[in-house]
Image (cartoon, rainbow, N blue to C red; front, side, top):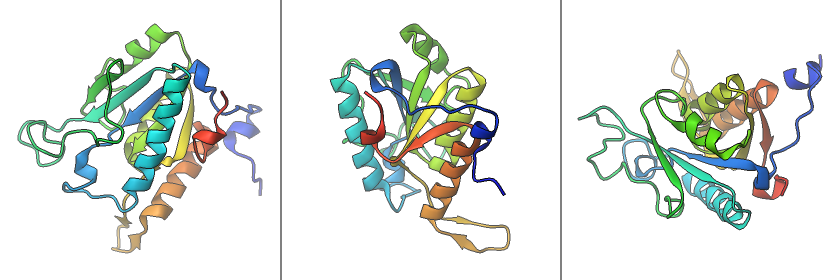
Length: 199
């Protein structure tokens, strides 16, 4: 049994993204996950990690793109007219930062995200947000198909408890770690925090 990732077995050895050469993408860090219908158990830790990432991006003049999830009109989750649609205050977009509205897990699907990134001329992405196993994962996987190298900041993402097909609960932290392991195997570099990124 090999402990090498598929990336390594194929002969690649990608380094973590360099902040000064990347684009930071913050995904779905909205109130729905704080006090809405889907509160996440470890959200505050992820928000703290994302806030540190954004601060470091500003210091390096790295573009920051915020992706927000908007449900269908009248939908319970991520209702654009409701109180839980807003980004969390600690990481909310500031002047000069771009906001992209999406309707699907993959942040590139049906949005102008790829066009916005292309205008920067950068090919490295640094991804954070919610949830690790759905929208972060879907975006990192799609990014590979589009020719980008992604780095996911582990302490700036989080997941939720899931239940398998026979009703067994899978703890949110396990869901997160499995999602990160899957991404590390074939789709992205995983770092624990912004301190592990190159400058």
